[in-house]
Image (cartoon, rainbow, N blue to C red; front, side):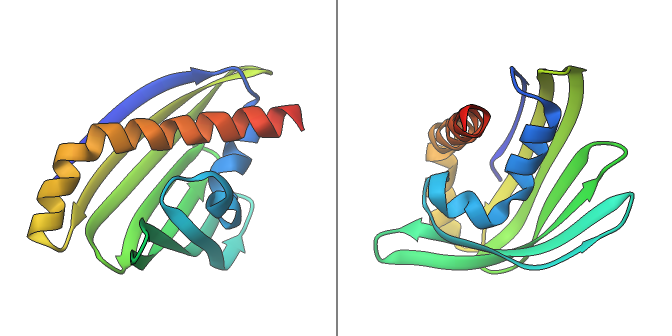
Length: 149
């Protein structure tokens, strides 16, 4: 099962990064291989935001929709994403955010991913680092775009 963890400093306010990660409806505009994204439900209180979201992921004719639960702990500044339906056997992303200053934050991102299909999972493993880097870069570019606009 492909796994990866990275810690990166961003020269943007922590609030901008939170908004970027939680604005799942916008993923289709910037995330590679994401042709559609939508929040199905959202519940919020003073400590947490709980979201159920659908992402259509794929390329050309090979597309599939997976549903995930997204929990944002506002106090700990931690976002946990887990697959609950779709082609993924297992998915867990964890975003941990830490404020450095008013215009800087540190993001720790980890992902564990496994597809149901053994052959596709083998292909994913071989291309995982390239895909991970491309996805991370797309979030960085989107943060830059949001910061300037």
